[in-house]
Image (tube, rainbow, N blue to C red; front, side, top):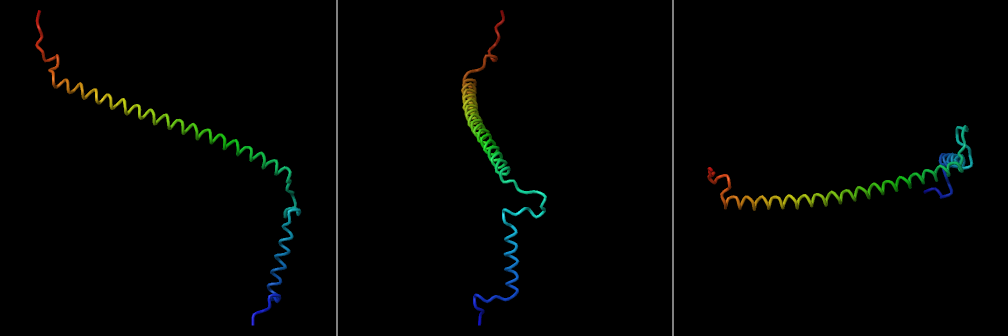
Length: 115
């Protein structure tokens, strides 16, 4: 027959007692185990606020850098498109010149007139 819920074996009672004793020693108002330093909650909250301000500043700077990066990327893409268009127009112009060149003999092939 299983034990009643209120019944515990002696080993379990010792474990429970040790856990309760351990939990009471970790209370926030107790001093640290080494006893040399105490936690200054006011100073810690000031440090946390200062750290939070620094993190906000870093976040702002990183956002600005990201925006500049996006702007530069957009400018580079515009420049690349412009250069593609320029290269395309140069190739078309060279093709037209080459087509004209084959239709008409170049000037260098005409005989030179002597005076």
